[in-house]
Amino acid sequence: MPPLSGFVAKFSLFHAMLAASAGPVPATTWLLIALMVVGGLAAIIALMRLGVRIFWASGMVAPPRLGFSEAVPVGALVVLCVLLTVQAGAVFDYLGRTTEGLLRSGDYAARVLGEPPVQRAPAGEAVR
Image (cartoon, rainbow, N blue to C red; front, side, top):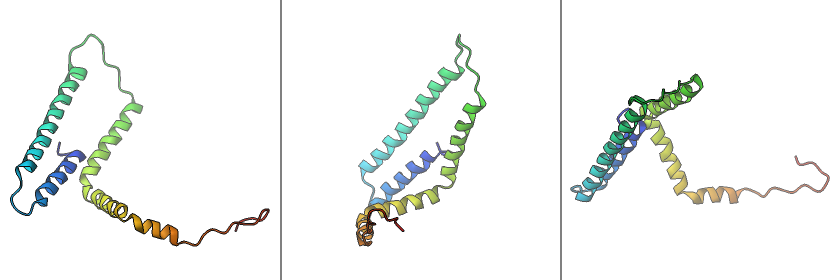
């Protein structure tokens, strides 16, 4: 769904798949994109049907009241999802820097091994 962060993630995947080919886009890429779209629509339909059955179907049992302490975390998560969508650029920049750092694991090892060893204090003496 477009207002949520999953939409931005799928859009980014589609963009990367379409930009990866130098010439015409292969049929397998179009097939994968179609499968992702159809799978997402099937999930939305299934979740909507389940929600209608659980929350709006006429049943014998009265639904429990929603307490304030239950509504606040759900509302906060919805707001966080919308913020992730609106600020997707900042999140992608952070994730890009994280990926670059993970791909250069040798830099971390060089920094750690390049530091002088910690001197052990003699027994009974405080470490400064």
